[in-house]
Length: 78
Length: 238
Image 1 (cartoon, rainbow over the protein chains, first blue to last red):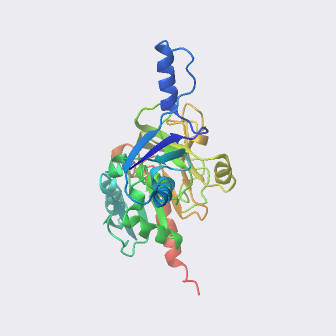
Image 2 (image 1 turned 180 degrees about the vertical axis):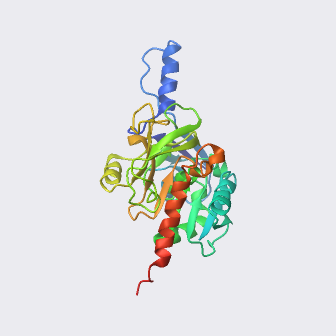
Image 3 (image 1 turned 90 degrees about the horizontal axis):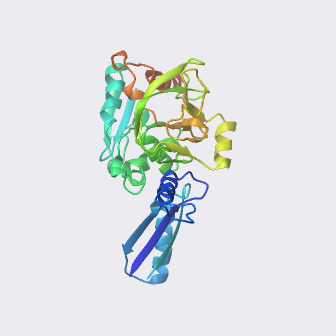
């Protein structure tokens, strides 16, 4: 199984990287481009009881893999 | 006084901090490896600059779980003085010893230059020797020094006079142009509510001798020493 984790900057946090990517997409001529948020994707190979893993990965995201001051996270185990 | 200067894989300002404490200020300073679980009876702790653990995941995110950081947590909980410089500031924020976070500079560029700082309050162990109104000219060298905190935290920092250093122009004004990284309120450094833990992005240890172009950073270390001397003279609590 894999835990697939997506970490993104919180909306209230300045995201100059996202803004720069957005500007570049607009300069390239793409239409209808809105706000861009650049985050992280982590894939962790896991074994064990999915219900237990769910709790462990959630704790790891909260304590270590993301910083709740500036980031949001979501994940799925499949 | 005895200082502990922490050393993580890829710390790179640890020797500079030891040099200033030993050779410029004449005190004792010892490097403490990140795997150590004791601070060896130090009077104060410096968490130095660098790129601990390659800045992987987030700056300071991995260093905060080092064994030595558990010792620093306990030391701070007992009122011990802890100063984080640059990556040290980032580590202290990740560790929850200081509020907020340091994120990518607004410009997305690594900024390496001299800036001016003002110290809005002398009421801290880290600023008590900085004369009112005096600006400090010290260098910065970071890519992720943009200070961010939510509105509630920012309000507390302001109300409790916990913003210890701000980026200003040569006239002492915290203008947007003088802000090198996009930090809220031009914040360069803060302290915790108890005022015994502080962090700042600029490098006072690189500006503590005239030979290096500025000795202004020395005032921050002298403030620490002033506090430590006062504490040593105080009778122990009954």
